[in-house]
Image (cartoon, rainbow, N blue to C red; front, side):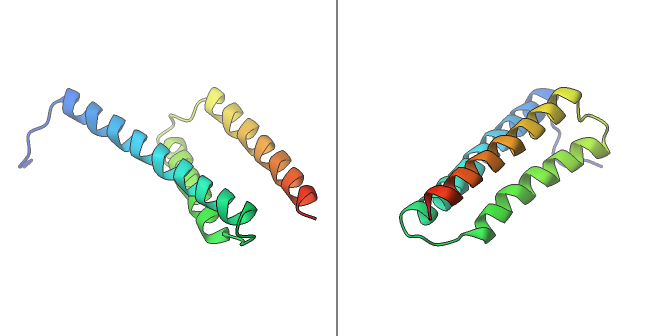
Length: 95
């Protein structure tokens, strides 16, 4: 028995709100990591790990439910390549 009767519109709004909240949280953590790295010269691996873990859980959930598309895979791969390139640049600039 469902105590809270919800329609598809409400469920869609909940998903959209969660998606927006995830984006704000992820990019906010990335900004904190970048600030700590570039200004304070601190490594924030735990925060970066949270961002990566959040993305992995999201992708794993979609793959589990067979809704992970080829386009999503290509975008994830491109994102990883760009992140590695930026990490290499930051490593060489920081020397």
